Image 1 (spheres, rainbow, N blue to C red):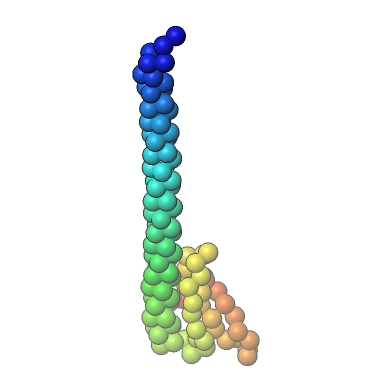
Image 2: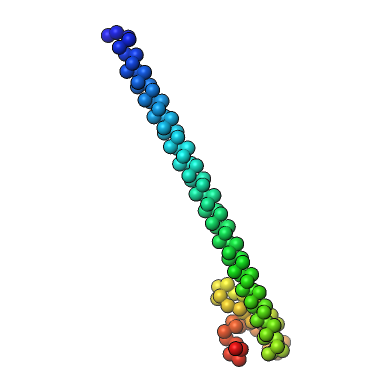
Length: 112
């Protein structure tokens, strides 16, 4: 067999293998880039959710403090209020016989 007849098929084979390697490396690089972007987006979404939660709790705490002002006008034993996220309500702190009690705002029947 003549060496010149083998050069073209070997060249095509080597070129095909190299193109395949470059294509595969490009696909791996693209996949890693996409994964990094998704991770960054996920972290940004999580940070935004935490900020929204913090803002909501702060806003509800302000509402509870405003509620305290009106409660103190009605009753003289009001100590404080705070927002309980798990119950999604203001918790009212009041004194009864030198003891501090707490109750959700909804349980304070006389308040309207």
